[in-house]
Length: 624
Image 1 (cartoon, helix red, strand yellow):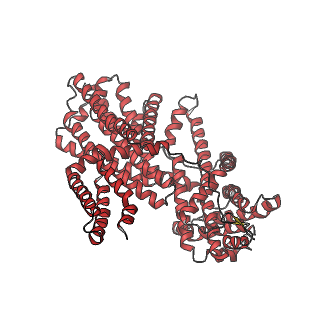
Image 2 (tube, one colour; image 1 turned 90 degrees about the vertical axis):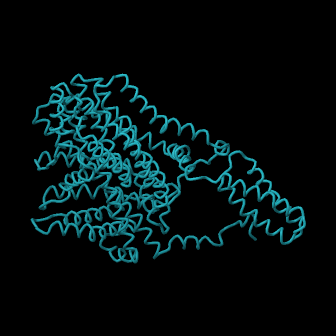
Image 3 (spheres, one colour; image 1 turned 135 degrees about the horizontal axis):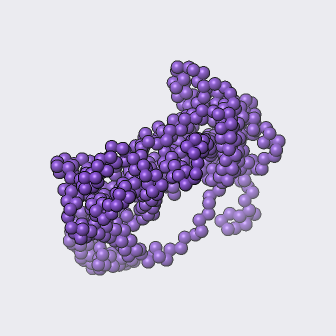
């Protein structure tokens, strides 16, 4: 290559290198990349132009880049400072939606705790336990309301508090992997406890003393729980809304950010435990001193985790970002004739669920009303335990599971079984006929009359399998049914609706379409069931008891009447939630089944083949 051509080819790149070198904010990593490219050009010039000025020029600029790299190479100390001064605040700014949501949930829960305590003086006993409340009342009578913080073993108290707070914060963070539901539960749980605990002292006339003692360590401790909640919600949001990434990629990116945020509060949690173990005990200290420490703590937490990230994030927005104009987002239509991975199956199922939301909600409300009215009229027995205390998250899952099991797992055929079959078949028909209409066009009444018996028969079979008849091996059989039989039935029902054929007639297609996709089908089924159960948990969690009890205190209803209202309320809530949530499983199975079919039928491919030769223009020119 001639020297002039070599210079002409690379001069723009060299000019860019010089501009980067002249910049005040040099990026050592970027300079390292430039240095590699420059040394390649320098080696070439030394070989072909050893006595030309271009070699001297490249040698000088390469030396400048080399010096800049080593001058700006970051020590471990500088990297440590950059994490706290730039990297972490930037992560917080990027996660500001999660921080705002976590704060809002916690404050709402505190309000629930205070309101419930106002309406029911015994509410703190439900939340904190009789033993703790009685101990607090005894301390108040002795004139030492804050003596709970005056354990003689300061070091032991510090260690216990630090371990407990680290455990709670970690649980708040890591349970975000359950699509954010676990994080939301722990935030609500802790918020209600804080509200009830603080109001307990206020109701006893202990205002400033309690506030200036509790929040001496609580300013940092509670702030850390909210921040851990933001990290957990960030994980959950990445799983629910992966955007253009796969769900796994989205989780990997979010996990890095969320883990950095969580690790940043670990030393602060330990600091809060130190304050509680060694400083809070001095409850007779000056109000002014304690108020200054509390205000300083809030200013630090708010300044570093709110104001500074906002200021830094706004300042670092580039001109390109400000001028960037994005096209109007258009929802991608659902293609029911293509092979899809599991992420695409769930995205399309959620889209179809959202499109049918109103129909499913109205149908579920109607079925729940009928179920509740008949159950109350026939005096069917349902046992809804009121929450005697706030459970741990997994105990609360079991609590919800027990209540739901009363609806599904019966001991004999009867009217309740018919109610289950009727409600399930109606809701399944609403959901699956919507998918069928999406693929094949509007359905006539004749088509509805043809397909509804499929939902009725499948619902009858599934509910029949749930009957125990006093069998001691009932739970083992239920496990096997849920794991192997029910998914095949659900897949078969999806096939019958997708093909618009009778359920029995379509049996050969069940296995033809499934083919080698059995494991994929089971994966969709299991994840769909778990997601539906998580959503059921959100609507039927034991916190509902607190809302109901607070509301009932406003009404002049006898104890017997209140129990009837409580049972009716829970019956309707659980029946509605079951009808409203479980169709999501069958929508996932339906979309998945259409994907499996394409591995056999390849309808999308044949559609494209049929369009060959029909195209009128190629690369902007008219075909002859």
